[in-house]
Image (cartoon, rainbow, N blue to C red; front, side, top):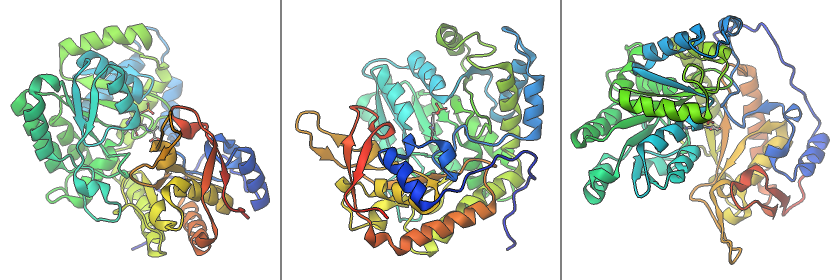
Length: 461
Ligand code: F0G
């Protein structure tokens, strides 16, 4: 095996700033130990999210210049529409400013109060948009998907038996659509197999329920199918992607992930009548159907990004780089969600810092310490994000898992950045017994992780 290399060279550089440990401690204190409240210039390697943080290619920047800003009927829209037809195969395409706007339009036009929307796992914004129209979001992940250390090639799969049982119990009329999130972001960036897509689609067809895909990370999922599923090793990844979508009735997409763009999204469908209603709603809040809340130049960047993301050399490097990070820290004794998934490595903070109980926020401690150790910004996906505080008693309830996500922006960091990450994480591992927990000093009533402030229950050095 040779060294993983980036299948691109660098034309424009953006300096990142080294800080001293002392500076970082002062900055972190000032931010109430919440890395969301740091300035990004004070972060060396920013792994907060892979969303909207991709580096665009020379072709995409060229496309930005070609962007036509006509209000109606812009050629940029038609290039975007053609790219979506080519990659996904859906007839009707409606651009939106990002993924959650596509979700809102989909659920508002398909669901109502009392409905149920099953999925492998709804992403937070998806769940929130389902609930906003009075419907209930139901997660039907296979049980392996909730066991961090267990190795299974497709931990994003939906439990088909439970889907059948739910349909029997609740009746077809209460289930206006089924969703599949590719890859399953909330469950560790884990892929869904083609066999599972087919099986879910078959159940949906039998009952006349449409199947929609949350396609944010479709290219990474397609490549993981190629690497892990029998019969796909020699298939071009474009074909694998087309095959996935051939089993679905439509999709929502945040182009900020596998669209390799900094903003944008869309909803797509085969249903002409539904598309018409969606366009009417789009005009109300997003804009005219040939731009949908985006500039013409953004549509150009997405059209090019959707094709570039399916280039085999890119995907091979992308997945190898994530795997390398995961395997290197796991070999050094850091427990991660296994196996490494598509866009991020998730450290199991509960297993890594077993001396800190869930209500003492081990994920928060790890996020703070990774910043102190190496200027690295990850995100807590545990009790801070998903735990609950009883509004009456003030009692805290922990989340089911205490994870820290290290999401890799696309085409941004190099292999030596990844090596640095490994070194910093393993250096922290050496002294992990010396750190303690955290407590909230401020929390908002909803979505508390964004603005919360904390204090350490030990003396960070
Ligand atoms: N679906 C999934 C699976 C996502 O991961 C996201 C965003 C969305 C939908 C919403 O898309 O942000 O364009 O409105 N995930 C980001 C993240 C925020 O950091 O994982 P959006």
